[in-house]
Image (cartoon, rainbow, N blue to C red; front, side, top):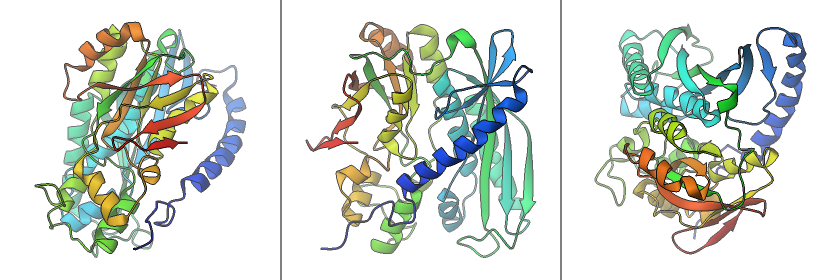
Length: 357
């Protein structure tokens, strides 16, 4: 029986990443004093999904930057570049809405191994499609040619893609999680698949351990491995902006790197924990990764979204209004758990295993 594949063994140690982030945040927080008493004064919201600055007149500007990660390697293997732009937009705007902000604009950064007009055009198509879905304007960007730095799966086709988005929110409508209380419900919105997190582990399991190619059928699915991995990240802007306009919402969480341990970041804003005891059956992509890599449930639920890409936390009395608002979109909202008094994240998998983080 082979050794279990883990995210850390594949090259991404989330504990080390978190430690590095804490050290970096401490250094960068010292820069806040440069804007004290001036327009653009930072709002201290350490560890949340977006950074905030005060524009005056009770308005806050929210900012977030992110990339597509090693999903770009799958795009190169597939020789298909028109979807990763959607991922770049999604990874930014989905974090902005977690503070209740409406995303309004985005700039992108594309680094390439060699100039490739056709590839760049296809990437731009994805960016434009993501912007249309999320209703943001792409107001600028940058392309850099860095042959000595960028390498990829296909000679000359190496690239990396990142973006930064801004949004705006009235101070009184800011959502931080500070209003969460024991008994609040956790609503889960379905993901479109693996999204843009955990691809390093997924690639190692499927391509190295499983010896599959992007053109092979994914076990248990009618789609190929490449099609499943390249499926764009779902963009949640419309359903979330709709639900916060029609129902009381305590907190919002985008389930990305670190998966459901992401919920623990709210502990610094509210003294609560989370019990996810009604998790849905995971999509086939996750079942295949788990089986081929002999991966434990504990590792899966702290690495992948397992079918839930976004969480809306609301008081019980807002349940029906929230579900009605979310039901107008194809995100399949469902109650997956509740807020508890005990800190930490506790998950009961569909197989009945109990996990604690």
